[in-house]
Image 1 (cartoon, rainbow over the protein chains, first blue to last red):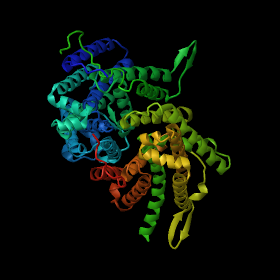
Image 2: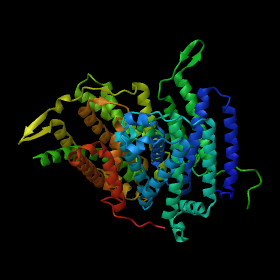
Image 3: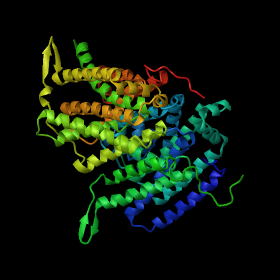
Image 4: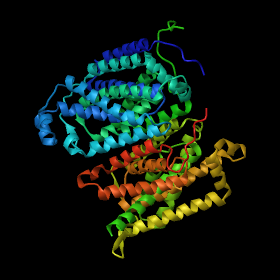
Length: 338
Length: 292
């Protein structure tokens, strides 16, 4: 095992941002459908970067972060949908029903709210050790899903909540992807980030050197929940509708696949995972729509896309358990210090 | 009277949960894998019954058991055997991938809509007994679960491979050093979990009369909770956990205020989190201090 090279996470983040900029600039000239795919991938960069901040640095898997996407998305939805529509679909207190904020105000409120929930949940969860912690995050996902599915008055229950302003375009998503990368890199640079990565390598050794593992995990949990919630807000205003089923096991699987396939121990890996999974999904989605071969259209049955994703994840786990990038971070050649 | 009625409901539901939890606990005790794909074994069992509709009941049931067992063995051979040295979270992610793969293969073949199956629908009738109304299916579920558990106990105590499995669950490395064949023990564990899963499918299909590609998900989530509550690695614990979750679910269903009842599962999982904080190692496992 090679020693991890010391590098500057900020430089990595900026290089990744440049690549994203190039992708966005090219996608600008794509047909609308393809442009939407790139936009969605940018949103996923936000989400997976958030996931990396906790899972990557702490080495603890979380199956519950999609719940923070849901919390962010629903909060922003309730704050931005037209009062008239809310009156019909929901059953909110009058002041909340009358309230209609622009997305630029509602979004930050939603992110802060998700951060607050993460703080409360994290205070309890971070006391858990070993496999109990991922199991608890799983339980959180189920709880948020069940509540979203049944709380007719606030989430619309089993009906889709419609009428969110669709403000997330390609460049908005790009902007937030860069912000997410920079925030994650800034956190990585701090001694708190270093302490958490230390606990990833050995919880016992970290505790022995005076690192309060619980506290470090809690901080990362809150930061990562807020980044993920920002992704949730973007996603909600990208789709324009909210349903509980959007934010459940399938999205959890896709986001975790992105993280693991790319390599959950590096920021570069998070982006690489999003890129690979998005490209594969898009290719097979178009195959499912139908490919014309010599006059006849051959369409693969639905489900093929997911099967291919699952196979890729399995192959990566078998062949490269640390993901495509492993510990490797994108950096300028010959300039890494030490 | 209503209390006893609820108790019977709880025990019969709990016995099915216990079967599902045993399947998960069995694999975990031996290879530290939380097998999320166990739900897909249950689901595929349902689809085998659907595909075999029209044949005699016993043929449908036997085919389901055989196919699911083979699928369980296949999963082990293709996905989990190469990953045997991986950490528990990695194994869990891998089982996620297997689950997703199987689910969508079924979706691709049969479509996403739930489909009706006529399987043992006669068992929906109830027997009146001292003022209690007990559906026949519930009685059979309890009897079958008890029979399977007795069978498992006998298997683990009396058969050579059963004893080896217990040894492997205790200390896998030591068992190997003493000549226990790892591949065989794990394969048998998967075969057993497949058999247990197929009985859960028989129950689910008989009870609901439908199959869908998502039918295993809820059951596997409950089975997770049950096996963790009992204590990962303890089979008695998994069974106990199953019954406990059954009792808690039925009690919540019966005693929660009307408007909160749709949130039953949220309460189950909330209690689960509270339980984790109280006793993260589970009821029947002593907390081992971490070795450095």
